[in-house]
Length: 198
Image (cartoon, rainbow, N blue to C red; front, top):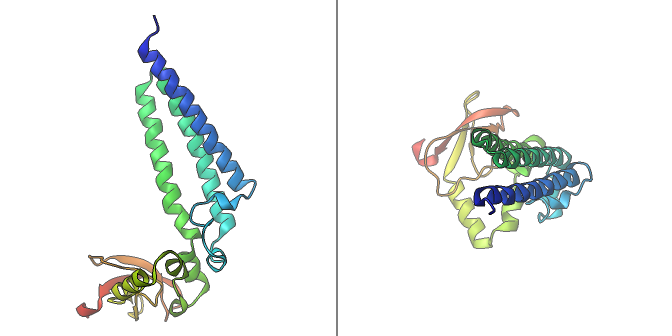
């Protein structure tokens, strides 16, 4: 009689190996084969927005991350099949950590960071938002963001947060963020405050 537990583990092993192979294949296609159209967000962006990406850096980051995730998923499926639950939990924890690193690390290759590096803050036109949002929604986001300003902690210069390239809609709190200071012309820590709190 077939052991149902072992049978389930075999199904999980096969599914894990298949998904892992897909992840590794996607990673190789993005990083080594330069199939940039496989990157979500970039593939549907208009040409003027695509130019703002560090696409080679993003492809290397995403591709390497997908390959790593594939290897970890395959390892997790194998250790689960072998009945090593503690190792499985560790492998999945590491898997989720790599996902987090991929998502956070990818931001430095995105248009918002490229705008900070390549353009004056006042020139930031939020082309990506204009592309994905309706005119009404875009104006609502702009109106909400213009209720905020950023203040450089180095020189004290204040600037409208929307014109600085930021987006803050229906938000609360008083965060501190790295932004390009229009006066310093360097990326500095800024306090983000509502204009009514001046």
